[in-house]
Each structure stands twice: as C-alpha cells, then as structure tokens.
Image 1 (cartoon, rainbow, N blue to C red):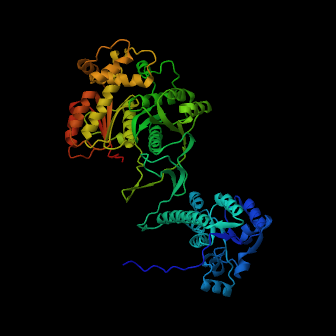
Image 2 (image 1 turned 90 degrees about the horizontal axis):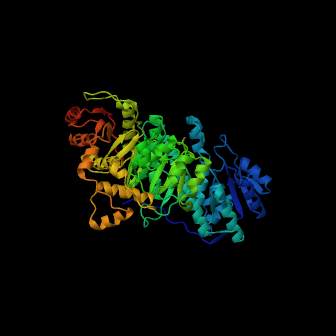
Length: 612
C-alpha cells in the first residue's frame, strides 16, 4: 500500500469571489501601472513589499506594507518578507470552515482574494554567467511559496503569476462586478503550477551541474509557443511547438504556418547546413523530406552541362543560389514539396529560383528585403519562412518520450572536420582538396539522415542518399540507384528530350526520371508519352551502362562501419574512389583489401553517426 493521503478540508465554495484584498509583490514591474490604477479604482486593499509597494502608492492604491500587517520586519537581507502565518493563513484558509474562520479571527488574519507575484530571474542570473553564490541568491523562495499556496486554494484565491495575465484579470473583474469566477481561478492555478514547476526544473537542472552526484530524476519544462494544426497525422491532436526550459526557439516564424513535420525537417536541415558551412568555409544548402536530406551541397560553381540539366540557364548564380540548385538537383523527384535550409543570407537570385519550385518552406539566418518579399508571396502567402538564430546554442542534452518511455542522451555535437580524415588504412593515401570537401559533405549529410544511411557525393553535392534501411548494402544500392539516375540526366538522349510547350517543370523532372528508369507498363507509358509531340526513342540498358562507366572520383560516406566487403564491391561499379566510414568492424581488413583492389582511398573516422 502507498502512503496515507491527507483528508479533505472543506469550506463553502462560491463561484464568484469579490476581490477586496490583494497581495502584490513583483520583480518584473511591466504592466504594473495599469493594474495598480485599476485596483485603486476598484478600491482594493493592497498588501505589498519594498519597491512594489512604493510604485503602487504612486498609482493611487491603498497600500499596507506586509511588515506592518504581520508585525514582523523584512529580515536576512530580504530573504524573509512574506513567509509568515498571517500571509499564508490568508492564502490557505478554507472560507466558511468554522475552525479556520475562528483561527483567522484569533490571529488577526485577513482573507486575501488576489495574489500578484512573479519570480526572481534565476535563468537570467545563470545565463549571464553568475557564480554559484549569485545564482543561489536569485532562487526565489517566498514567491513560489505564495504562488503554490494561492493556487492550492483556488476555490477562493486568484493567483496572477505573469504580467501577460493582467488584462485577463481586469476583464474578468469588469465583467463580474469586481469578482472572479471559479473557472477563471482554476485556470490561473493551473498556469501557476506550470510556472513553479518550470522554475524548479531550471533550478534543479542547474544544481545537478554543480554537484558530484547528480540526481536520477531529470526535469524538462516545455512551453507551448504556438499550437500546430496537428502532429505527424491529422488525427494526432493536440500538437504544439515548444521552447525548452525557458529558452528561446532557434528560429523565428516570419511567414506561413509551419506544421509538425515541416519543423522537424527545418531544425534538422538547419543543423546540417550550419555545420557544413563551418566545416567547409563555404555556403551550404539542404533539401529535406521526412527528416532526411534528399540533397545537400556547398556553393561550388556549376559546369555548363549542370546549368542546362538543372534548368538554370540565364539565371544569376550566386554562391547561395548555386548551393541551393545543387541541393535541389541531387534528387529532384524526392525534393518535390521539400523544406529548404541555407547557411547564409538568402539573396534575390536564390529566392527567384526557389520561387518556381514546389517547396513547403525555407530556414535561413537572414533574407535580403526583396528576397523575403518574393518568398512571402509564394504559395499565396502560405510558403513557410523561418529565420534561424545564428547565435543559438543547442542544449547539450536531448530528451524524448516514445511509448511511455523516456530517453535522454548527450547531443551529437561532434564536429566532422579534416581531423576526422587523417586515419587512412588503405595503400593509396592521397586525398585531393575536393575529395576532402566531398568526404566532409558526405559525413555531415548522413549525420542528419535516418539510419542506416549511406551517401554518395561529388563536386560539392550529394548525388545519392540511401536512408533508413536495415541492411547497409541496401543503403549502398538505394543511394546508388539515385546516383545513377542523377548521372543519366546528363545523357544526350535525356538532355535532348523535346517536351511539348506548357509541360510543367516538375512534370519534366518526373518524366526524365521515368524515361531513365524505363520500366513503364503500357498504361503508364501512354500517359507519359503525352508530354511529347513525338515519342522519344528508349534509353536502353547498354546505353546506360556505357554512360555510367565514365563515372569517376565519387565519394561514399557511411554512418557506421561496413560489416562486409559487398558494399565496396557495389560502390566500385559507380566510380567510387574515396571512402569515409567509422571503421571498427571485424571485417575491416577484408574491406581494406577490397578498397586496395579497386584503387580506392579510405579514411577511418572512428566516429559513428547513427541518427534516429
């Protein structure tokens, strides 16, 4: 059996309680003038302390110092002001309870109908780098005690714990002849307990970092910043976007209404491009779908052939625009309806190209004014624009709940940089600068790809990403099919396809991919051929093989070790010359021999990059 709980204390509960006496002690004076003038007009008797009392007198309130009311002065440098039976008795008494009423009369305790309190700024003290003693001093004691007491006694007491609630309080009292309703008081109490819980959570987390034996209980406070239309699926309600532990969000919603999956894509894509830009010193972009990149790239100039294939001929191509074009064109079929991330300020050139693509939104650290207007007008104003905070510091610890089980882990903050590429066990050791860039690109891209994952890269862009497969060699093959499709878009037959006037951009993309794949049934073929005035000649298997045979200098990156040499055997068919993987398999020697056989250079990073 559990511990015996306390018996219920009964009293007379009325729906409406007139506010005759208020206890007000606030650190944050925002909105206090309007509230004070309102309470003065309502002729509410105010109990208060220190600077709050002085201000309220200026605003016309009848104010009695708490020290005068209790008969006890503030002591211990203000640490004890309101911790007194005459204060907490007035907050906790059950009205209409004969015993409570008698004790209140005996001890001269006044019924307190309204409490307005906010707390010492503990989080600010920590954020500003205060030492242990300074942070300790900014832990509020009296405030939370009054809030919790008032919230417990919500049958009679209204607890206003934030300046944002002042208007609600004043509206409530105007509408109810100076009274508050029970439903209103309960809502205030729920908000108050949420506040003290989050406050204690912040203190608990900070204290856990100061001791040698951190407590086993971990507390995380979520603050709903905006409701979401639904979660992963329409039936998953309610849903919301939350800040964590009183911190700010890593972005601002500038335009549009982001959904749950949009935001998962955005925050993962932003971390990818932020790290990629740091690692390479170049602009970076990513195209995300369902929490994995369809493409990612850095701002390496396009060749003439790429300009033609990616349909950007005659368009200004700044480094930012180039990175985006490369990211989008790794797998343009999968990028349909993507979420875009860019590491640098979005310029007009980038916005103008993005304008014509089917995309849900973008996250970037800034936008040129004209570029922002272009994007805000996209999709009739529904295109999502998020402005990332370049200075945001991602929390060191991550928490999640799945199926009623809580998980915690340290964030994967390991930076993929050139230091990761120094351990080369193969006979060939040479790593040209472009190969190093492609290796870093591959590592960082798969770091934010659902595992198992493997990716191919070349000339500053991912050209095939295999995500979420149970078998590593299946990742290699899946990504390889995407690589082959990307390369075959440069085949003269594909580049020479003559579409009818009016065929939409994405329809052209899809038609080229199906032409390359070439496995259409008759019914599909009859629809496909309507894109052309004349039926194109097929691209046969031999033509594909001959064209793909020219692939060279491809890099493959894996989020975990290759357990067998089969992945290397398959990769060599696609022109792979450079390999990056953690190493650590029992089959490492076998894999090294395979790389040596095919003339590949492989780096062991000693860094597994699973992502779930």
